[in-house]
Image (cartoon, rainbow, N blue to C red; front, side, top):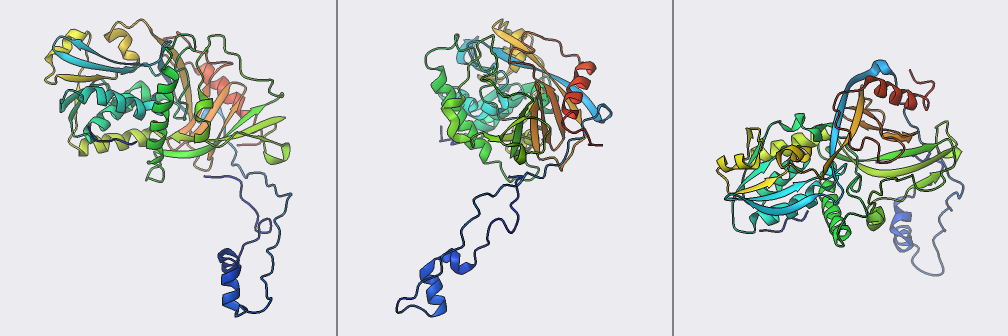
Length: 405
């Protein structure tokens, strides 16, 4: 198998940072040459010092958080497994099935790293005609990776990508969000997770700057009325591995009141990648179809039904659907609801305040109640939209923008 290697809001004022001319940029020797002063004791004038007290509050456009701007409410069941994602092969009848599901709230973030390993396992025996079950984040990515490796690929799914649970995800870079319980993983899990995360990160960076911005960097403001006293409570013991990949993203910065416009006592700023999932999924689908891939609309109710597929090798990426199809009781739903507000292209940042997070995507402004800790929504399989929850979440964000209309 061939190798499958995988914006800023603060604007300085002109007087704050001197603009060097070409001579200053090129250095003293070139400056002297240009002026004809190469001999004797002539020296270039030292550059003017930078002002040590520079600061400028970012000019942030206000979020118009009003209930009448809610255009829809969607619910996603994140597929959580205490032992982490299932990535293993088994024989079902005369088929080789490579399982790749159970990524919690990290499906889009980890998709490439896990897909590359799943496809490596699928192609190890020489097969070049591959079936992929599921058209969500993991299915689309596995199909793309297999196709790039030279395989013919057919995706079998009940739903097309825009109808899957993956399409209802928030779209933030969150590679260890509900990925596992720290006390339930094996000894090598953290190292594997790190490797898959780094692979995924490198792949995502290749999509920066493309039309429709499938991936882009955004800034987030973590706001609080009281001084943060330490890590958030974690009654379930979720695994967190952010310290292993700290070099991938800029450090979170604590801001003084003069450095942010929000009516809160405390604020921190972070810069992280974000996925515009509508554009991202469309890009993957278009590339897959252009590469000769096919979609087949089908629903499977038991593993025995896989016998009717013409392919001998299957990459199984059904997400939460694996609980019913494979009778996998280790797969637990974690409910997450999003209230969609009318898009605001001028808002290029996100906020998190009192357990509610927002992010501005090209297809709408996401508002999600994430609760006091990661146990919020755990083992809740209710996919019915809750308007009261949506209104409360929007009202929480509205407190930050009292004059927005």
